[in-house]
Image (cartoon, rainbow, N blue to C red):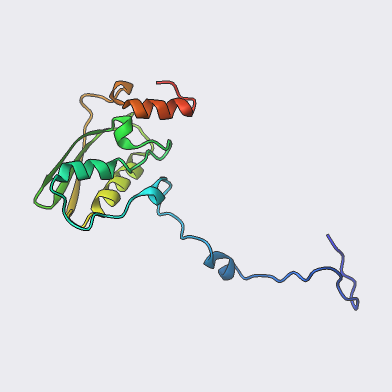
Length: 152
């Protein structure tokens, strides 16, 4: 640290202080919660698809587990989807009844599916029977977990 002597000019480059507002102005807004992957979500479809259930699955394929960058579909957490008169239904389970990320995951599902202009309401049905096991994971989900050093 350079000492400053009163009456002497400071030598070296002049450092200007920036206000906190100036610093934060260049930063993205903080996320609403801690889950990741929202930056990878695609834009909503411009019109209602013919196969709404396939479109719901595609949207859910973009929702990542907050702890691992693997989609809910790859983990086998989505048990089913349905669509009827503007309401998207998602049958969803979790890896454990005490999963600390349940609320984050449900909010991401609501937000991603709800982005679609042809979806008026998102209903999430928690399914606990049959219980989730690693047997429900896709081959791609298993490959991704292995890359992170997690055995399945």
